[in-house]
Length: 138
Image (cartoon, rainbow, N blue to C red; front, side):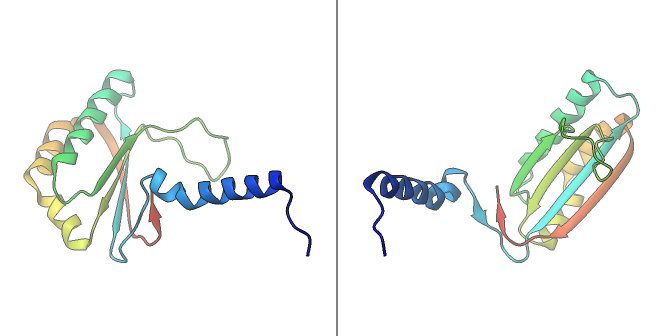
């Protein structure tokens, strides 16, 4: 068996260290088996920067709800156009909950109800995908 030269050995150790440290560097945590991922897509009645900003601001305020473990809010990415990619929505939010009960509690939380009352005039269509997730979250 041939030995690695010093340069290859250093490169190998450097790469192995980066790979080993990556989860902590990216703040990745293992998901619980009961983690619920709640992904909501919004299509606005009147698309435009002002309405996108208004809805995004309202969605960001939901992070005050204690049952939400992680909240991401965004707009469609400018990725490659493919038949399987639907980027027709205007705003999306992605939430993580520890379990179904927490997601159920979120639905009736006063801040969520106030969000719907205050911002529902902005959207014409909403689609929700909920799933039980396993793996690593970013």
